[in-house]
Length: 375
Image 1 (cartoon, rainbow, N blue to C red):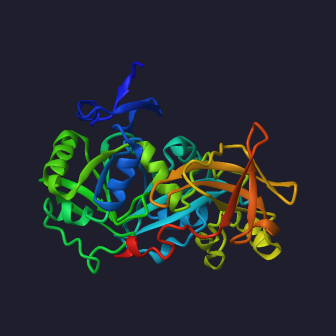
Image 2 (image 1 turned 90 degrees about the vertical axis):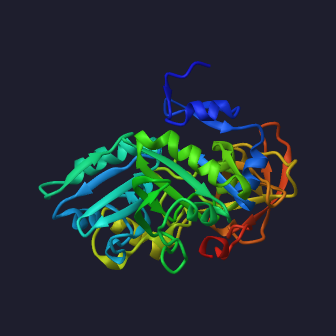
């Protein structure tokens, strides 16, 4: 396959034997030989992920905070500059337009990090709802490079490349700082990620991309550092029960149905979708996103497979991946609320009408108390 667009790390990845797939028009590394080996690198050592498609939308101005409070369901007043928050934009029905993280750069300055496939949708949504507010909304596009450094030895690696204090006391989970990393200035170093491990995300000027990549691998040679592709990102997020927009989330699903009700702050005041969400919280949901845990890694399931209980269909599979750290195939599915009980035994019916036994889990089996994230 010939790719028209390359990320800034393409040639270095190609030299390492990456298998590429098309992601938003870019050649994206899917794996470098073994998804399982890359998964274990992020769980046991350090994994480096190129997620170049993750771009930001800059929102700033005297009305920025009030505007974003109206747009998203979480309470941005709870984070100071240097903080990050996970939230969603909802429509009037409470359906999720997107889930995203927001970085607070200053009192009236924010970077929004939408799902890569939803950047233009989110930008258009912001413009459509800005009204007469004194704000600027600027999609930053691909002016920055982005690498995600994930794993229990990620702190040890980055401490070799920056003088910034990365201790837990100085940079807690979901905090960020401007730093110089590997002599690269103006690097936004954020203690965030999609792996479920201690990890950091680096956003930095694109002209330093090749240098940053090389520096990370040279500094981490004795720490088990490995390049990791999108395949491992899928298996890692599945073990943590992290939903993905487009598969597990869409504009007809609410945060309460997706298990993200903890992000909805009804007490902060009015926001788009508040009335619908308040009604749903009072009445309860009809369906709920759960994790399905199969007996072993040989168990098969596919997106769209029916979930059956007591001979009746009670839901559909939305995501599937191998949980290499757990030795189990895992899936996410929406099932009827009365069947969404921890430990409940159900069956997944594939397209050949074969039944695969599975168990519902309401919390991730891997590090359910987030100790690895918070250490």
